Image 1 (cartoon, rainbow, N blue to C red):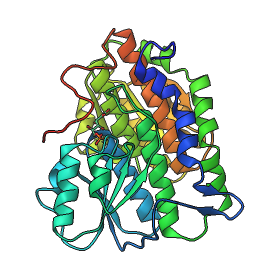
Image 2 (cartoon, rainbow, N blue to C red; image 1 turned 180 degrees about the vertical axis):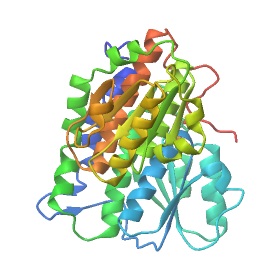
Image 3 (cartoon, rainbow, N blue to C red; image 1 turned 90 degrees about the vertical axis):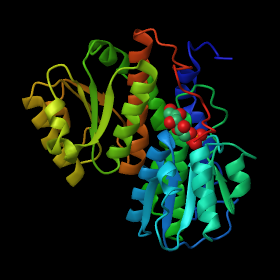
Image 4 (cartoon, rainbow, N blue to C red; image 1 turned 180 degrees about the horizontal axis):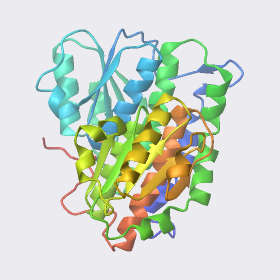
Length: 351
Ligand code: F6R
């Protein structure tokens, strides 16, 4: 059942601390400063192609960034496009799929196998077709997800891919990273306990459209924030790379279009995003900033959704939780059938 929550989605959002504890269990060796994957034999791919659809594609984009930072060339592809024209060159092809049954993702990993590539499944579902067909499999361990909107499984995918990037890149992992990973469940709990997302969501009901912007690791989070909002609230929501605004989408920005900007850390991506925030504000758009407070972003925000201070990769998980709650509360205020949005199915088995 829904354990007292009004919707499975809200229950599953609140299950994230437990799901992430489960995901991390046995995989972070604090004393040895090492990440471990019991179920995987040693892999040393020269390059990775991550293939996925929908929310899982956003996790794949996030993962690909982390692999690249770790020194392993990696790209994320929409599975439905990859199968049609697989890029040349040898790669470990990683299918990222909650259900493990998505037709698009299976088509992509099958095409890869047909071309002689090794494949790895990153999935929530033990015994799924993807898990059975790939050469290697690792589980995100999120537990069953009933709501059509993927929530805890996105966090599980992010976390598993972050662990995989560390595991593939080096024999040892630094203390800060280990600490950030280990405190992820309690940091997510802190977001859940203190989020002001309900009041913020309610103050923007009736907006013409909602735009989500971010750079670097905040970019896939922005895409995911927009997808979540559009699928459960039916409001028009789009995610853009913050740097892309000037190349077109800025024409859509008005007083009627709140901009939700995710700003992580205080590096170059954060500084440049702050400039983009100023630009949308100059066009009269209300600004909601999701941030750890390390940059100047708060100063230009109409509302701030705060996340605990963390490393950028874990902060991206925390920021997404705020956006999940924003989407949920918007949809709840509009009385939408949150767990079963119109026209959508939990598992998409036809391309
Ligand atoms: C969004 C959502 C879909 C799925 C997509 C892929 O909330 O749930 O976009 O993420 O259909 O599904 P899986 O991960 O099962 O391959």
